[in-house]
Length: 539
Image (tube, rainbow, N blue to C red; front, side, top):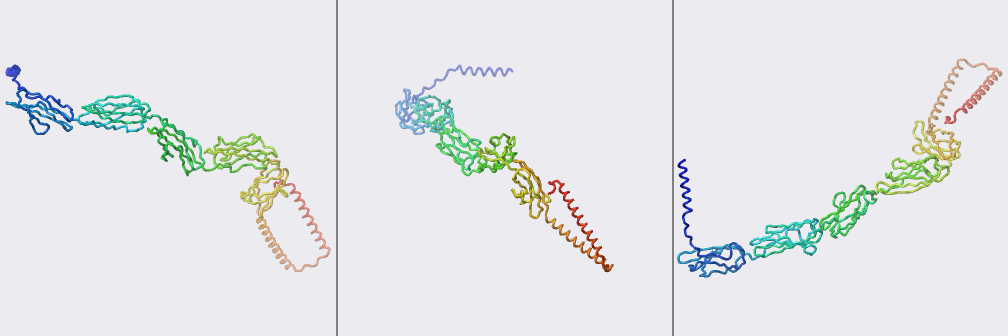
């Protein structure tokens, strides 16, 4: 403890004695450079000046890494045409007892600053109101500051001052206009370089309207021309981009207002058109349509002339139609409309009138927007109709069977055995005949302007009757032969019979005539019984 205290006291005494001792007398400098100042930026011709002690007898100088040379007792020296860059000048002063020196470093800068504007590019059209102007600058010495001048539509707009560290400036809230920005870079010597950039601010989006085809409508040709109308406030449109079903189709000039698509297949399509201006502002429009080259026609109409009173009125179209807008009307007749597939049907609320002409109007639109309308007329008949189906005994249809009213109209059955025959109203006899089949007749009674269905009429085959006839004939021959054989055999056993008296043969003849009369009476009774059978059951 005691030792530490003594050591501390000694250190304090040593330090105190150091501060209390008088300073040693410093030697006076023989030379001091007064110009240029340290790190000064100068031109290529530099005058170096200095002050010296009165005892100096001569001076010597060294410039950069060059050799030392004497300048006598002059107090300055001219250094012409120094190269750009840093330089170091050393001045020695000599007297009879010693030498002393001073030095100064400075920078020679005779060139203007380097300045390049990086963005935006000259002539750009920008679709933003906030524009950043960027640059890059350098100098042999250093950049001291920047000055940015903004002109709008050729008139002064504003000036912005920036320090040497800046490399960009943000021009915000610019109006749509033409601008010119002048950027000036200053170096330490006051030299400057100016660069300019001109650009246009255009934030207005063009307008675009597709004129044809109508959106959602059908096109009836496989060649479609899509037309549009476009406008840009600055009249700066540069072109149109056209897309078909999402794929790029074409680029067209700004003066164009249409594009043609050829040989499109039936189906749905979407065309998008983009109007682009010089600032890349873009307006888009699209249209969807369907190619439908299948025409809309009327396949058939019903009825024609000679319609029955209870008929419905039909028009069959060639393809599906829009039932919401399609319709059918009959002049002077009220009724309801219904559909069966592609057929529109008008059902009168009450029977039509005899011998009257009716006009039918129809209108239809398919799902592509194609319209069809038309008219036809028909009259109702004062006659009547009979319809039905002719079949064989097994129920199979018989084609080409003749159906007729004796002495009146006739028709033949179709492949399905059906027939429809116009007949006079009232009681008639309907006859059905076909080769190889038994002809059938039946009475009918129909009212004027009506149609009666007699249902299925079955014809028996005559081949079966012939076959049965042959079988019966053969059986009869066999039976006769058998009887003949047995009678002959019986006569052979009995021998020849004695001759019978003439009177006996008269009695046998009398019995034969009586038997014949009995058969005729039976035949007449059977005929009278047939008259009691219902006529519809005679066929």
